[in-house]
Length: 217
Image 1 (tube, rainbow, N blue to C red):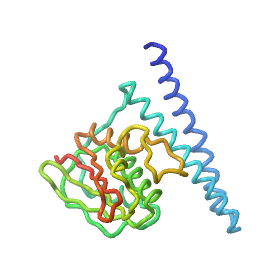
Image 2: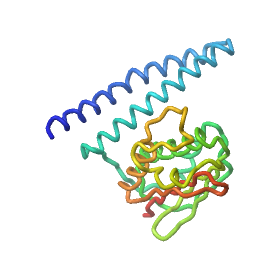
Image 3: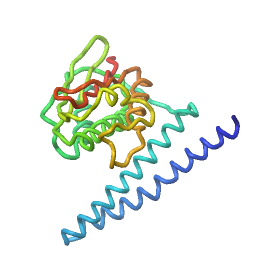
């Protein structure tokens, strides 16, 4: 047991240490990209930035899963206006394909930084695997603000829907894409630690609908 804990501590330490040089590489390449005039070279630099983001995401997932198993995973819930979700969702919309949406005005209990990670992961998955516009719906249900992220893909199997939040599970449509199968598991664990819930159902035309239940104040 002692050696197992030491191994997890080592993994957590290495995952954390990887993020620092990757962040430096990303910052330098972004600066070069701004200064570069040649279109082809800018595209190549953009590819490097994307790969750096993938490494950063993998390190994040590995680190947080390890910390959870070490019982060190913390959330810091604060009373927030639901309007904060407008900025969080919009900032995660890197393809600008989220359809116009609104959020009911209310007060919610939320860890803002962890919420950024959750919505980033859900929206990134939708763009990566479904590659369709995204619809956001929201309503107050009982003691929660329910926010649904819906894509229009048609390749999600029943197994994908049922197992999407399981640790290390990757669906059929994830073949050929880099990933660990930890993102949705981490997102579900984080929202539960905030007192909420994450559920995956089928979207309107067969894709994914990820429903977040965020506690009301």
